Length: 151
Image (cartoon, rainbow, N blue to C red; front, side, top):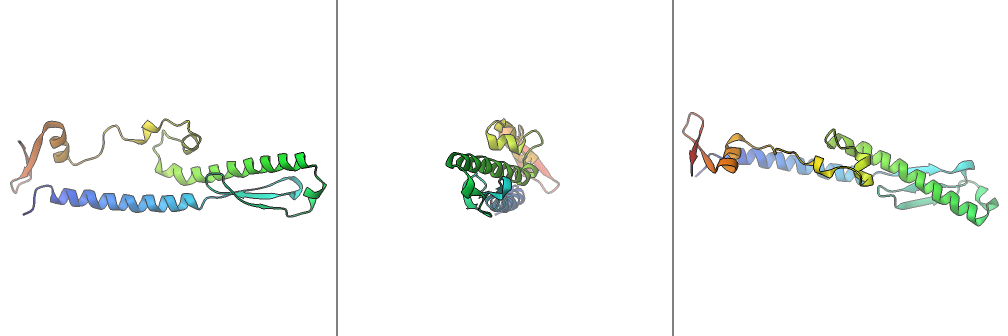
């Protein structure tokens, strides 16, 4: 036996399945983000992943051999920081279209965003469900559209 909510529930489930697919795609794209930076005089090239993890360090030239250990270490740190900044920028480009206008991905990623703005103040739901939630009423379909009745 079907209920007045069967069609609405099916629509909600379909919307939910579509949103899950979008989230899976978003997560895949986020995992694929990298940032690469090349130091001055091509002394080194580093690539980091989406969370700033070091993926590779390359020395395209022999310039690093003429550097003092501290100079090389400082260059590595600054080049990694530049690569991380690029990765964060790319990650923000992936995330921004999926965030509310008032939430910037860069702020979300650096922990300064108001994450409360990510949730709607008034969640979307069919009118009959809203009436049930807010007033304890159930919608009944009498053939000429749903009717609201007390439980």
